Image (cartoon, rainbow, N blue to C red):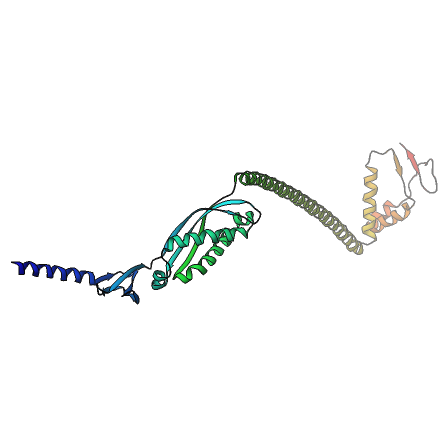
Length: 321
């Protein structure tokens, strides 16, 4: 009976020893192995077998982690106290150094971050701290990385979350912001009025140009019409003169005589009270004689009694009705 109990105890002890000697390490973890107090190396990932009697292990996480730094009060270059809090993102790059060189990385990083923040903010003016946050983040990251590098850590990023200036500075910033907004509004309004005036002037100029061009076109068209009208009248007169000249070339004495007689007939048929007898009456009669047959011409040219003519003057006889 005693032997059975002892056997059971031995088996249980062996199982416990086997469980203690086998470690399962995940992909993002590493084991720093110590044997008899000395660092043997880094193990993992996967199944790791150790001696539970002589070996001791320390588990290290390789994933990127963050550390929140609470509000820290710092004084700027122009002696303005401000309160800043930020976040540090870091990861382990050397598991062995992270175990044997620093006991508490979070506490050490917190203290280093506080002193580094005061150093960085002390080299910057308040306006730069408020406006150049990216530059401050980069400066903090570089300085923290120089310190944590010997701990096997890598500071990947530093982000300032909140900057709280003193109440007096906040009030001054509020007034400045209000004045700046007023200035921008005035500038915007002035630029709008300027643009409107420019557009109005441009519109008036374009309207004046269009009106002048219209008047110019109208004047040109009117002048062109008058020129065309004058040219057509001149061409008409020229054509009429050409026709007259062409007809005059074909006229003879008989035709002219007939025209002369027709003119006298028209004068005689007018309601005038006076008659004008031309001096060329004899020549006219001779011309008419030439137009008539010989027998008729002799009868028409016999002397006839001529009534007395009163008021003759230079071969012209005027008879009053």
